[in-house]
Image 1 (cartoon, one colour):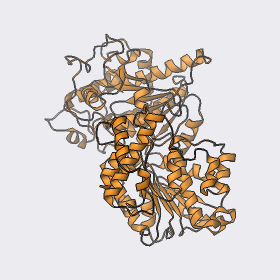
Image 2 (cartoon, rainbow, N blue to C red):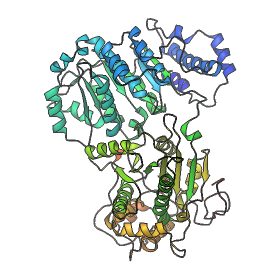
Image 3 (cartoon, rainbow, N blue to C red):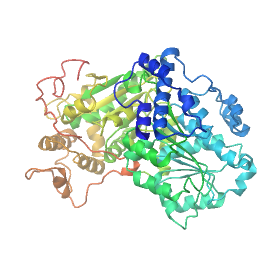
Image 4 (cartoon, one colour):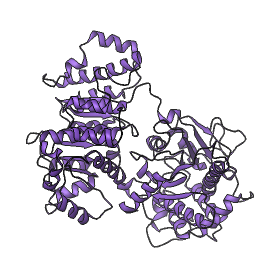
Length: 620
């Protein structure tokens, strides 16, 4: 029944109920408020009913009144003093950070969380959700130890008396949350520390042991390592609150085991009652299972912050799909789009928006290749704007520096793997470019969600090699993707056609990045495809006709065996080392060609998937 309660709240059970049905249900049954009083004994059956009604009432109110918050909820930060929020926290938020009105997500989450209930919240990124869980967590810590509100408390902070923990799936998001937490706690004695992978554990421990820690923002892998190491000195015997942000993402990248071990190493709720807040953009089965192990079933509130009729980013943002003649056309097309948009802005800045783009690749090797080419392009006047790169092989310091510089830039391009696809907030991103089919539909949507944030405009571009088209039809079915033929570089045949200026520029830049090209070339053999021979042919054409190498790059001896079944085949020269693979925990870069049944080049009998570009826009 716990699962049913959350599932019904999240609206994942199937078709949406009509408003009239909701209102009839509401009239026939007791109110959710009467069922969710903290002092009332709740069975799991009653809990499920309360959860269903909570969702029903919220959606019915949205439909009938168009309200952003439930009547009686406070919607201005200054008014939270009425609910006991300490003046030092509110001062930082209202006076220093200049926040006045809460976002709908903040109003719906902060009000019940301040009552001490455990929270399961379905919330998207870019909605103010960080502050929505951060403020109640900090206030609970102060409620349990009022001395923490005074600055002098920082001198008594210890590494073995952590009071609050926030878990995040990525280093970047953890650091982003820690920065926000330090802003909110600047007038208190609360000490905020971060513990993430990609940084030296010894340095982090020295910092925590020297200055103490009240609130620890961490990635699951690093926190589990610290708690399991008796020499670390990290402990939380008086833990007041635990937050899991982007819970679905943590499970997606394989942190379930670490999360279980972390919970086992924290004080049991019988020893020390704590508030747990679980925030997730989606509520799949594995998130429900996780909630069952962490949430108090007799004292939790489900917070649905995504209205049923809300227009989602992937429904309202213009999305273009560019059908590539081959892999040899991918980079020239990307560089052509960057050049075109930057030229448009420079020639008419008064009537054009700056160009700020994120380019997503499925493997870290491809990110490194494009970043290296862009570096040489800037030095040779072939890249018209600043470029940055973020991927799992960079140190945390390198990733943080790149993220900060990209945030501050007006016109810039960030080349990235999926490490930035969720939770990361980059202001004023105008374009999201995705190269090849992402590993799944959710990845496509989350990447696209980096643009058109906070009411701004944006657009998405998907560059699709020919062998990915059939899988794209299935994976991205129903999304408003329109074929775009405006990039000349996308359709030039690398064998017989006249190369564009961008083809020539890219070929020169790839000659300067031979080592990166070799590794990126190998990374594309890792996916599953039923057209293995055609993929080999396409990639070899890219290397020889497209770039101008005398022969394809060397391939690991294990590469052909890993690539798939079938007879012997020329995969290029063999090399002794294994092709490098993406770091799973850093935002796993997935390889080319997900799924089987790809359409051949020019063999499509209808719809999309062939190389016919006679029509502009329309169905792809």
